[in-house]
Each structure stands twice: as C-alpha cells, then as structure tokens.
Length: 410
Ligand SMILES: [Zn+2]
Image (tube, rainbow, N blue to C red; front, side, top):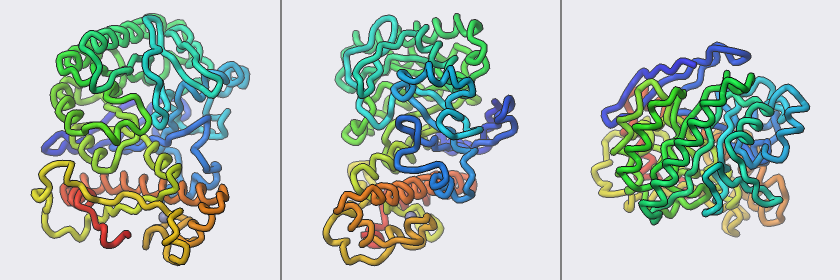
C-alpha cells in the first residue's frame, strides 16, 4: 500500500490518495479524506447491494472499504473459515476491500470488562472475551484486507491517570503479541495493519502511547480512547479532544494513515480533517436514519463570497441544523424532496410527505429511503471536502457547514 499526500493545509489537513499494490485490489486508488462504509451484522444497514451501488455518484463501491467489527464476526468466523473465500464474499461483496475494527462505532461499549489478556466484545448473545490469539484466529478465518489490532480503548474524560496508564500498557502489549505471532498466520501476515493510539484525555499518556506505537511496523494508526463509541461523542466536549490531538499528531509520521472511528458531526469531521485525520466511517448517517431523520445540511461552498468564520467564537456557537425529523406531522403535506437538487434516488423519486407516511406507519421502506439519502448526502459531503481542499476552498466549505444555511433547509 502506497500513501501519497498531495496537499497539506496550513493547520495540517491532508489531501491524498492510497494506492493498493497487491492481490485482487492491486492498482485500486482510495482518495483521502476517506469515508469507510459502516456495516452492522455484515451489511450496510437497510440497503441491499444493488441499492447500495446507487448511493455513490459513480455507482462504484470499489473505492469505499467496508468497515466490519468484531461483534459482527466473533460468532460466525468458523462458518466464514469453512466458506474459504473470506468475509467480503461471505457478505456478498465480491472484491470489496474489508477492514476489521475492534468495536461497532454506533453502539456504546459497556465499560469495565477488558482484561490483561484481551477485550470484551458484545453481541445479542452477551459477552465474548477476545484475547490476542483468538483475535488472530478470527483474522485468519475471515481474511480482511485491513486490521485494527486489538487495543483497550475503555477510557473517557473522567478516567483516572492510573486507569489510562494501564490501558496504554495493555494496548502496547496486545500490539506486540500480535506482531510477534504474525508470521504463523498465512492470510493475516499479508494484511495492512493499524495500531491504536490510546491515552484518553491524559496528554502525557497520549504522547507516550503515540511515541511507542509509532515505532511499530504498521500502515497507520487509529486514534481512540476519547469515548466509548455510540452517541457519547455528541455530548463530549469536542474542544477538549482537539486540545489533546494537537499535542501528539505531529508524532505520527507523514506517510502513515490516521483513522478516527465514531459518530462524528459534520463540523467535528472538518475540525478533525484539519488536525490531520485521513479516514472516518459512515456510522453517522446510520445513526441519523435510526432517529427517523434526514440529513439536510449544505456543503455547497461555491457561492461563499466572504470568509465569515471569524464570526464563530467557538464550536458552542454552531447553529447549523444538520438533520430534520421527517416523522413530524408538519411534513405530512410537504411534497418537496428531502433536499432540493439532491441526486439520490430517494430525492429524485419521493417526497417528504411520502417518507413521513412511511415513517408514521412504521413501513420498513421509510428507513430504506432515508438511509439511501443520508448515506449519499454524507458521501457527497466527503467529496466536497476533497474537492474544496484541491481547490484551496476548504475554509469556504467550513464556513458553509459551521455557519449553516438554515433558512434554506427547514
Ligand atoms: Zn437525497
């Protein structure tokens, strides 16, 4: 895998591309900042493969790696092993690049169950304890292309220094145990590996974790330990996360990828891009769909004449409406699309009134139509991020997203 960074912004934003070099994905190019396709139980929620293809502008999913997590495969890895062709084919996504992560970014992880040997992974059947050797067996069985090596990210803003220190040590131990045994696993030893930088909100531990972890031979790093997945990040003080990030991001070599998982709001994505994060996931549009909402925020930066960002004193001032609840009665006679000029099949064929009817009568199609629009909208937002960086208009995009065009969308 080759990582080329074409453009670094004043504050550290990185426009680039990843070229895959081996196997069935050879010569495939992924653009960064990149949005991974979030999956739950082995599929993109609410969407069949055929419908999913219509969500992208080019109808081409090959540049969107699938993000799987341990809870989706911990019970099925033996069946996937018997199938022999790997998890992508098992899920019906032939030739799709797959990336195995530790946790589901849209589901809160229950705190306090990780141990010295491994981590707790939760499914509907309950807790599974996954140690490094079990984790390597799972990887070998399902044959993902990318792997986030096991780590203990069970830290939050109020975690004690002692607890954070323990989790940094554990994550380094899992990482070293994984690397030490890697050559024993024929499929896994060819995977691209990602190690996690932990340390919660403790700057000393973050720096220690970053310094130690970046000495290991991996393709990139997952920045974790700010929250326990799920919707917690919406409540977290994002300024605090930014303040910690600036202390250690420079320690990560330029040619290594930086990933952050989780439900992140559009302005948070932009701030993180500015801090040098390359890869995110699409758990946010899924979360919005589950709330019966549609994404409506504007990212059309072409007509922004003035940089109004100096009006914005802090993220507390952000008043953009990102989503609207289309189950509200006021939409029952609204015959406009979710977003005017949106090119998704939902907006081209259906009205807000129809979606409101489906949602209020609990028809499954309501979630399907919302998910098509929300995922399309979010992927187009990432396209706008890349285009704006290439055109040196990132500040204009940030202005539109942070200050909002609420009069146009409500
Ligand atoms: Zn749409």
